[in-house]
Image (tube, rainbow, N blue to C red):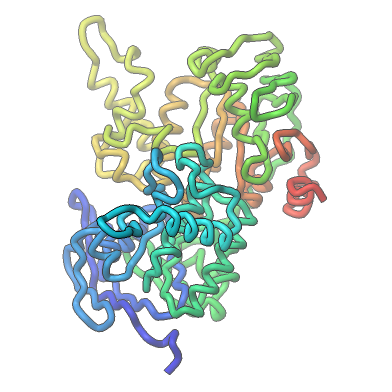
Length: 497
């Protein structure tokens, strides 16, 4: 019998509901030793919920699990970890005020006699892991001082160090560079030789050809298919995911834009060299570059989030922006890459998140007009197709795509003319991507302007009218001809070929 035919974990008729909404229904699945099972589906399909049940974060409502042939019902994350199951979260689970070394060994510290910490052994092992993963960090670096991409790699390093029998990867490449992705895939192949079973959640179908043994597709909480990757195709997978054909070619357009909306001259901060660009009314300008190239820093400098010098013009009139508050006054919105910590108040409802910056609109002189507020929110919930039980549902319980729509609804209601969009569809499935692209197009067709940062090259090609390429904090190329916006041209400029 081949190792990849040996089941280490078996799920039988697993079901789960939240707020009377069924999230998983009758899930039957085998996880095999030495195999990468890629799990894919639209946001809200139940992928993360299923994995959280395996990892002891959620309890199942019905069904059973067998781990190494024995009944398995973890009630805590620690219990699952002690059994040999690790979970690399899309939402980082690190302690910001601790070092890289302290995070990697948290809960598994090496000690000497009388309980003293064996710092030298932990530092040496941490350095070995850093070298193996080819990371540009040090054991004593504070997590808070690292970029999101570096933090994600520390999360991965932690799981590799722990020597789990099963590792669950939840969108591990959504915020890391191509180089780090290649290193991760190399580590995954090494783990396969050690007979480690892996569940890999991703929306990036192009990654599957490098690592997938089997693919399981979820739709609306049910498995619609499990097949060997070599026996399927991306088209088949998408069809099982969404139940329809998804065609992004319709987003390409040949419109000529002539009315300048925003012009930036020699904007400079401690992160970026002087850069100038302009974007027209109705246009989508994309920014490409590797992680750390300075793309987000350009947006932050213009938005007033970082201290910067330079000139900014809106409708050919010079303006002053020294803070995000100034930017909002000039009708500029910013949808950040990290929607969970910087874009939303997760403990608040959909209604509260959408109307938070416009509450004065509902003030009738002595109290809030709740009826009017609810009508505005309901109109957005309908228009943006925000899938939820009702508008009082907490945003932390929504899928990534629906959370992104809540933030977008907030800015649309606030009446912005210019939207800065950092990683618009990071961690969002193909079906939700299509809806986000539709909303972006509607915004520009109604006279809005978008400046977008994306690490997803197909996304830049699909939705951008022009693309500026950044490298090492500098603007290195601008591609204005849509036919020249190709993966090859973008990548050549990004890496300096």
